[in-house]
Image (cartoon, rainbow, N blue to C red; front, side, top):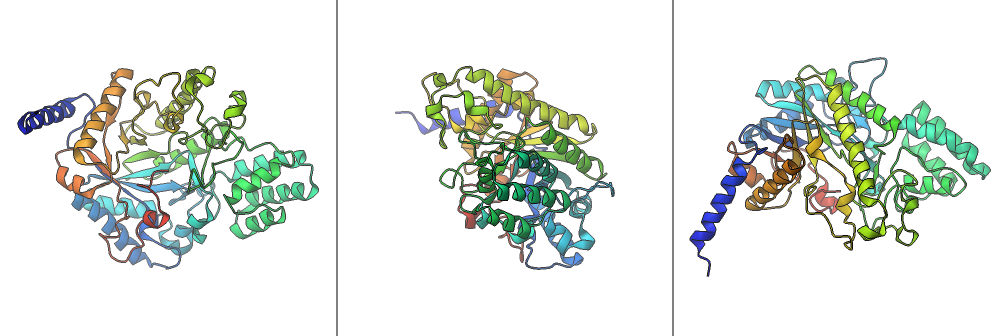
Length: 460
């Protein structure tokens, strides 16, 4: 029988090997993700003093944990917590910020001020390809407003209207295009959807698009679609009903580059940009028409063909990886050299090559070839795992990336355990996501809604 001493020795040796592996950063990069949605709610107005108190408490709590940096959720649902510095071309501001905190409408600067006072770097956390939830039960009234993607909606509807055979639906498309051009608001949107029989079950946006496509319109090219032509799978596969923009679409890329540059260059105290959802979603989604060449009998909502069922599959995956890599590197090219660029990534990207008769796994569609990204570091999300397992997986990530490229980015583990963060404190790098959204650390805040949403580790 193997002795405890020999097992213990192996574990110590493994930890030393991992800690000394290329790309494993020691004690210099400890970060915490913070969402304004955790700190504020649209059903309660906070005065400027309370806004700054909550922000400072969040940054101070992160520092007490051992963090040297905070990732502040800055661009989410196509809306920003800062309008940028160009008054003639502002970013659409999150209604929660603009409506309830008019004098603090630039919430990113409030975080930067707190970070400067407390000696903590502030990085803008950007959701890149994930747009928003299409599940009405997860939405809040104060989240609905103009987004950076409204011009693409309007353009898509302008092109769709002449194709539509049904007069009522044609007029609905024209009315929707005008709505997206002149100032989107939720109630008129719902009213127009109701007029053409688009229900909210399984997602209002999904049903609207399918209704228009059923009358002759083309699917919007700026959104990803499933093999069955829907913009997201049903509730059985995705409770969030997440809508993703298409990273292959020129208009999407231009808007993202412009928005990220506006954020990165208009805040002198900002230390970095942190990219999230810089990927295709897990599971089969691509630009409209992507799956037409795939075997017809496998084009289903739950897409699970074998690798050898799809001709030139590896070339197809390589092409998708190329789109994401080029987008990341274009973003890097828009930022000053002093700006730190990081990205959250799915783990296991560089695993073993699947056998030809093996089913295509949902994670294979993500296509994050981050070893070739021009970023300072990446954060594989290793949530819900004990410390020894995190270290083992971290070592595998580093080794896999170094097989692809000797100069691969640094790798920092993304963890969801405050106990691990406290245990490692200053001895190792980490990035911490609080599943409760500081609800147990800061009094008088809403905290995270993840538990109420019934999500597993918030991964979607």
